Amino acid sequence: RARADGQGTARFFEAGMDTALTARHSLEGALRQAAAAEEFALHYQPVFDLRSRRLMGFEALLRWSHPGRGVVSPAEFVPLLEQTGLILPVGAWVLRTACREAARWPAPVGVAVNLSPAQFRRGEVLQAVRSALAESGLAPGRLTLEITEGLLLEHTEAVLTTLEALHALGVEIALDDFGSGYSSLAYLWRFRFDTLKIDRAFVRELRRDGKAAAIIESIIGLGHSLDLRITAEGVETEEQLTALSGVGCDEVQGYLLGRPMPAAEATRLAEAMPPQGTRSAA
Ligand code: C2E
Ligand code: MG
Ligand code: MG
Ligand code: MG
Image (cartoon, rainbow, N blue to C red; front, side):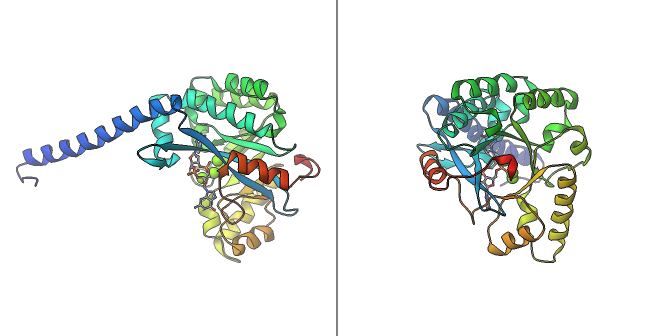
């Protein structure tokens, strides 16, 4: 128990920090071995066109199954990958694997990959994307890169240059978690995104005629006037789906329509639901 003289309090906190640091170090050590031990895998969550119900593609989501810890959430280990720099080799692996697995799906079913700001900071992302495309033979138009607003806050000029170079390869760029962070509309003017993903937090609050619906409707109006495709993430109920349909949302993703699944299952789903037409025709 911490004493009132302050000394005990300090010791109490030090002990707490030690425990946190030890836990962090052991997680970090486990992460370092994870890649070599092939404990990482990608799961794929389907994204559908709302009007036609056509399967447009899948979002690749990183999974880590540690023999002792079980499945660890990316919310827990992605920040650690970023802090340790491990996000560079792991991020390159994600790109390679997602492109290789997506190349087996019937065209034009695509794949979306989440990128971390750290991958931009070291300027390695362009080369990683180029080689993932070259190795897999995946048509660049079938790959979407998802970035978050946080990335645009820092090193903006360098980031914009890299985004332009990625666009020039023919891949699509999505702004993920829109509305969750700083949401400066200025970002929408600085770069021509292809897709805007409305954050789950808005979809969760969605009721017919509610405030969230009004906000989503205006985001969609703005997005459409800038020629963006709008995807809503985290769709869990029929009520949300109906409301999204009413405000003109283009694409939907969420547990109601499909949970993230292993690659083999995603391939079966893609083959069972052959898409017609092209992505841009949607
Ligand atoms: P995100 O990119 O916004 O991905 C969507 C998250 O929402 C995923 O969580 C997905 O499983 C979850 N989700 C989808 N539909 C629903 C729904 O209907 N209800 C609820 N409650 N959740 C839903 P997940 O897989 O835990 O990933 C969390 C975050 O970790 C991702 O958010 C992304 O920011 C990051 N992440 C995942 N994979 C990677 C990766 O390969 N690289 C990087 N840099 N980050 C990744
Ligand atoms: Mg995402
Ligand atoms: Mg998201
Ligand atoms: Mg999110």
